Image (cartoon, rainbow, N blue to C red; front, top):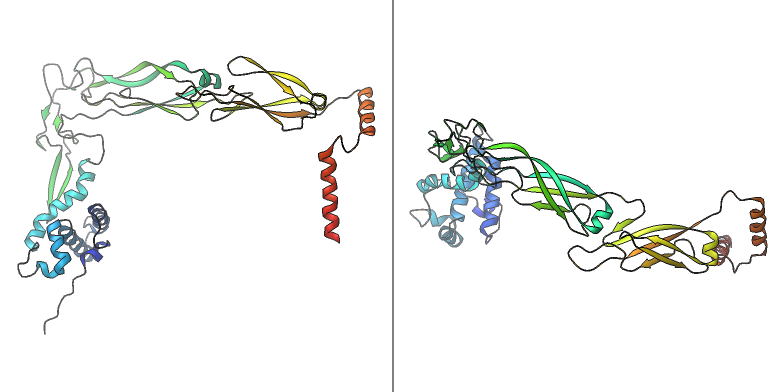
Length: 383
């Protein structure tokens, strides 16, 4: 009696549900292929078999026609000359599957800077510049002049890296593609060309000034516009002001990271400013006024009503920070702190004591009420 081999469902094998989209299917296969790839499991026959099985499953499910046949008939769709791929089809398609999943990583197509086979050009690096400004400068805005160490295109070879009168040549190893393939059984592994480092070309006679890079170090002086209302932590991007590209490649970008220095008197919250102002005990009790200087250099007088308490906050409209790229302006909030008199003379002590003697609960309703409530609370607990 022949023993029947039971094949695992392709969807179950890849860990996806029937009807999943192509993106989910590809991600599931990518994860499993990385896990069971023979290069990561040398000598492991079980891993090698698993890798072949998931490759077969993916080869079927990624094809709309084969997938439709499998969804309807299961594995029977590919038996006895069925509509699906046979063993030979699987073997021939594995290189395509491998390219689909691993090609980006091997050849640098996944967002790297190399552009093999495109005249060896590489995009220049992005640069970062840290700039610290004062709160006054953030309030008014400014134009800053900065010096940035960077690289520029070589003026002798015009970025090609080759000596004048010569030109780069196609790499003899990869034929100008920048990548080479190595066959391993069913699989074709693609790697960066070791001769040209993926550029697709070599320079037999390099430029004497830049040594073949096509660029030279230089400190550039740039003018940076800091708009009024800029906030701490803002990043300004200057496109194309980074390092020059290698061998005529496009330049990178310059990113300026702004930080605003702490101010001696004002604290910022968005477009609003906060300032803590101490006043005397007598001004708080009898009333009065004081004058503050705002960030724009103007003077604002704040009236203190009689009986002002600690922590009272006054709002001065329109004296905060400008809102970036708008005509709006925040407000200035002044918080009162009441200063207790120090180093009293004998006469001052006598007057304060006299005031204390003739004071009633109406003069200090908060403190009187607090202690009264506390007494009632704890007496209630003991009952």
